[in-house]
Every structure is written in structure tokens, then in C-alpha cells.
Image 1 (cartoon, helix red, strand yellow):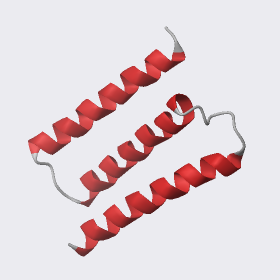
Image 2 (cartoon, one colour):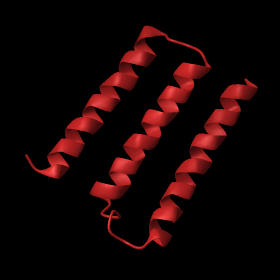
Image 3 (cartoon, rainbow, N blue to C red):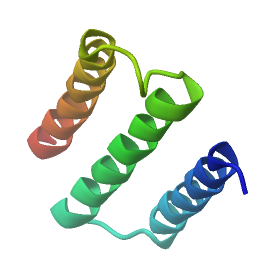
Image 4 (tube, rainbow, N blue to C red):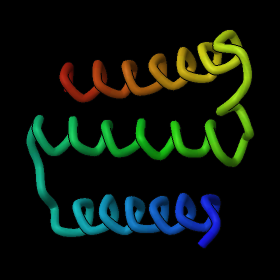
Length: 82
């Protein structure tokens, strides 16, 4: 099985996992941190494999991950303040 197919299957599994957590109504800081972690993992897979940034200089990867940390950080702040 090709690596991109494995990544695609993992992304589907992680998406179904987050859907399950959302539909069951689980709440709490641990759940939110888990969902943010899963979101980070999914984004890392997309950046590395589907955007093709796995083997490029760190500069480009840092730009993508900085944007991701900003978005996830703002979501975390919004959740903790609410």
C-alpha cells in the first residue's frame, strides 16, 4: 500500500474519531485538548504528505506550523475564556 493511501486512511480514521467525540457530547478540557491534538496531527500529515513539504527546508514548514499554532492557540484561548 502506498504511503499516501496510508495517510489518507489515517486522516479518515481521525476524522471519524473527532466526529464520534462530537456526536457523543463529551466535554471538558481533556477532550478539547485531545481534539486540538488530533487537529494538529491531521494538519501535520496534510502539510507533510499532501502539500509536499516533508522534504523542503524548515523555513516553509515553520510558516505552515506557525499558522497552525496561531489558529489552535486562538481556539484554545476562546474555549478557556468561555
